[in-house]
Image 1 (cartoon, one colour):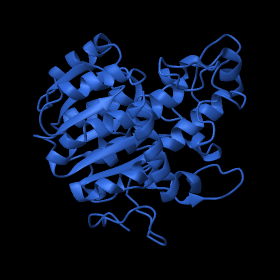
Image 2 (cartoon, rainbow, N blue to C red):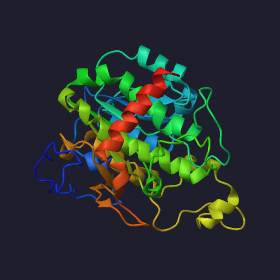
Image 3 (cartoon, one colour):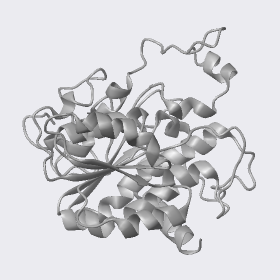
Image 4 (tube, rainbow, N blue to C red):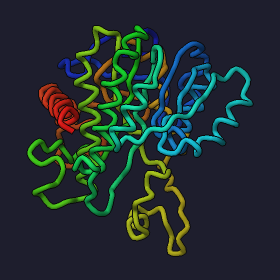
Length: 333
């Protein structure tokens, strides 16, 4: 599928569908993928939008004219971004609102306070590789609670507002870490199996992709949902990694200086695929698919894949099972 015409509304789990391609590359930045797109009158929410990939997503959407709400645990951290965008000619209004995805009370408050249609929901916030198993007050493993269950609660809570928009998009920021970490329905919170920081992170990111597949039930409401891998980017996401791990990744020297490797992206490049899915006309009607480097990624079944989307993350049966699990978990919280 080329970029000459809008993509067809074919879900990712349709066998043999052509992969969507775009003229953009891994080095294209967030502004470039929607150059010339007018988002005036559109409303967006970006979780974790005060820094890193989220801030670059907010910049691109707002500079295209969208009204953007930066949903973050500490709204004061978005003050500089708001001041910056207030000086940009033609930028849409930008607000901050408190949202702690690991706290259902906070999610519920955000949903209750929302008024009117919502055109774009970017599930960007996340935590990575907590060194020790930690639990939320509900007894949920914190990475799963923050990266998936909180976003699921937010999306389902805002569903009436997404439906009201008539043509809304949900974007889930996943990770290549999902490739070797299927969702463990028998022990999702590591109550019996040994806790592993990367297994917990990867599982939460598989769950995010499955959310977009499960959201095909909202297609009749005009809502599409797609997931992405932003690639390697140095942001606050690495804040829980110790120095030895950062050195093992090759991004920290013996003196503690952090420098990205040549294949790492800038935050603006890392946010490009998020913005592409959120606002490009090329994604009109596309749902339940997974992208990286601004292209739709193929499904892979290799034992040690280096890219693409794992079959376990786009399995419609697993997606429906996880949707039911998440809904039940939230009801009993």
